[in-house]
Image (cartoon, rainbow, N blue to C red; front, side, top):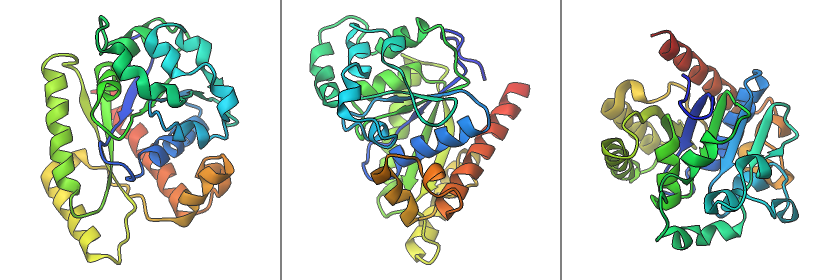
Length: 266
């Protein structure tokens, strides 16, 4: 389970090049569930939209120092980390400046290793680091894949889901071939699932046939409380602990912890 970087625990890149699949919702609520089980957790908000930061009620004025400054090398990771209201859960926030980082890095050395360097220099260890990636396979996502131990893929149960997944898996293989040979699949988590929908049932069956054990048993249902929570600046697990969506993320965290315990014991 241990990372080779700065004594950190497991670093998980939460990736899907498609938007609107529940990627940020998964990052926020999975991290909250991990912290609730006394696993010190850090979210790195690597999406220029900054939705993970907004989801914890962090205003723009609190993001003057952000992950953008870390990527550009003008601040350390320690300088930008903020404590959330969830005990044991911290976040390195994002702001709109991050949208220009790719152009600013294009001629820079180690441009795909900026997060590697930042985390390696960070001496405050976490049990889990979750990186919320932008909805594209760009240089920011490449930085996340280069530093991560594993990739978690939230995937909406829709018609083109498998096509997008195939592209992402090819990208992961390319990263393994050069930048990060130890990168593994944490797993695919099916999101926004409606069991009354025949297409959703078929997509779930197809994904499980295609990837087998790389698909989490836990399925995240379509749930209005998950959608409402960010508007109140809090994770769904705090907003409504009893809703079906919150209970699903608690189950997902338990499954992830179990898988990693087995991995560590192997």
